Each structure stands twice: as structure tokens, then as C-alpha cells.
Image 1: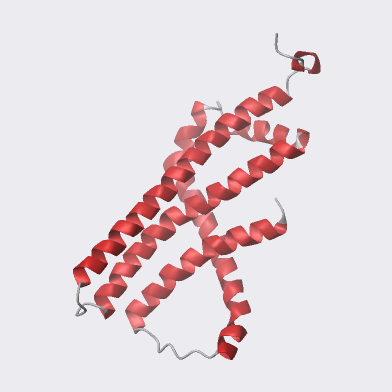
Image 2: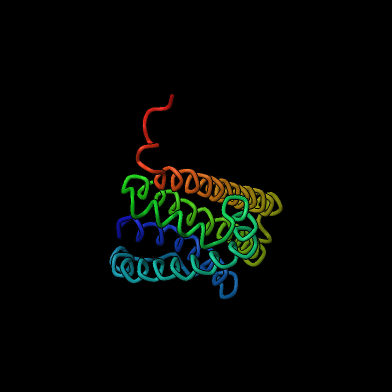
Length: 193
């Protein structure tokens, strides 16, 4: 995967972190006045992008450890006897087939984004509800807004988790099948009979 793709992936992950962090800050200290000039917006774009990128790196590592403990360690044995077997199969693909390697890396990028957004959506939901309670409690249709945030955020979180889980299981199956194919003796790779 190219550096640009990885950068974009981490910015997408970090953007979710920035949303729920800003909602929490606004909940605690109040909403700032929205008088932001174009010059101020332009001047803050690069530092904000850098912070978003770093937040993406940190959050990716946190959710990686969490998801590994909660789900991945239980699913991997269905496809590979040991973690070493998985890494050896993956290494075989990465070293023997550039095209299959690209497909694996593309799938892994989608997995990381879905994994991170599973928790991002959940935390955006929680911080969004907290923000509504702190700043919008007296507005008409307050309860409707709270329920809308809860339902949409929960649906997004569940959808992201489902997509992540599906991608993980598909990756294991593909890595197992593809590595077995790549490790077959060349004489066995002929046309099926």
C-alpha cells in the first residue's frame, strides 16, 4: 500500500476521533462562537490535519489491541492452527505475488477503517448525546434529536463492526487459500481436469 493511501486511511480514522473529542470539549466548556475567518481556517488547516493524522495513528493502535483481544484471537484458529501459521501464510503471499499482496493490503485498509469507526461511531453517539443534554435540552423536539443520534450512531457502529468482522473472516479464508495455492509445486498448477 502506498504512503498516500496509508496517510488518507489514518486521516479518515483520526477524523472520527476529532469529531467525538470536539463534541466532548463543547459539552464541557460550551460551544465557541462560530465567527471563524477564512484566513484563520486556512492557517489552522495544516496543524489540524497533523493532529487528525496523529489521532488516527493512536486510535488505530488502541482499537487494534482491543479488537484482537475481544474477537480476532477467537476467529483466527478457525483458519490457522497458530498465529505463526497465519503470519507465514501472509508472508508467502506478500513475497510471492504482488497482485495478491495489493488485494490483501486494500482489504486490510478497509478493515482498519471499519474497526476504528466501530468505536468512533459509538463515541460520537455518546458525546453527541452528552452535547445535546448540555446545550440543547430546552429546544423543541429534544427527545427526538437524542433518539435520532442514538439510533443513527448505533446503526453506524453496528454496521462498521459487521463490515469489519466480515472483512476479517474473508481475509483469513483468502490468505489460507491463496498461500496454499502459491506454495503448491509448479507441476500441480496446471489446468484442472
